[in-house]
Length: 350
Ligand code: SF4
Image 1 (cartoon, rainbow, N blue to C red):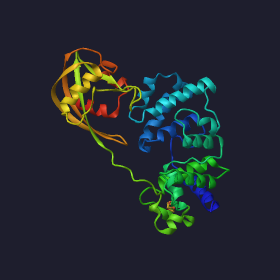
Image 2 (cartoon, rainbow, N blue to C red):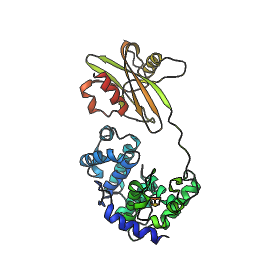
Image 3 (cartoon, protein in one colour):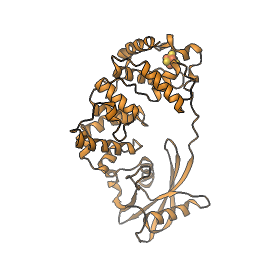
Image 4 (cartoon, protein in one colour):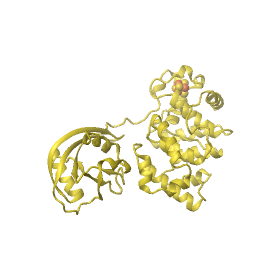
């Protein structure tokens, strides 16, 4: 069974691999950046952003020398900002402990911030030929279909089964190409809906295809619908400058700058939430003058409706919980700003 998977897969990959800006590279830094970006960001976005990021930070030491705010700015719009903080921390550790290089072995890579099993396996196999199967969502789908895995892959029993099979069918002569080949197969042929089984190189031996019900796999828990949340935010301007607050440590989007405001609680109006949140964050009492508009923004686990108000300050006490900055509207672009705030700023600038 393994041979009937490995050889046709590799033959197919050598003719059909995706043309990606990091493909063909065995530079561990480039592979690390690409793999970290690929987590939670679409390929379309990565095709634009990866070359720009690598141009700005071509080496590990170049990112280690950047401030956290510079690194956040370079990651702006890619989401999941924990990833860039971990990447920078990894760069700092590599400069201190490994002479500005990533360690080679899976067992050492996995100890670095933000590098999990998948990323460590991808780097060690692609760059150093280590025999480790890299397993992400694409790979899980291909393997669960090929072997008709009946175990739930959202549970540890299913995860273990996929890991065992993925390592069993790994091509030990070319583990890096094998890992990239199976990722490409999952992304181009064995797609979540309507897999192209008739043009698949491993269809002859694919148990899912031969059962006539490939899309039954992988068996996993159903996703809960993302909750929708109302958030009230304000444009507060004085002397030609607008007030921004910094996202606090330990929260989503930590370190980025946004318009002041927050979540509307039960039993309060959107305007009341705006006044309360701004008092808590900045210590200032405000007067809400008018509604400017609403924008929507979706995170993977949450949808938000941002209600934007124009407001003015009644008193300037500064004993709130957040770090504040008054900035010229045209200079906002020099700060790292979340995408939801950018959408709100486009309404304010009208
Ligand atoms: S034959 Fe179909 S289900 Fe099986 S691996 Fe290929 S695309 Fe996926």
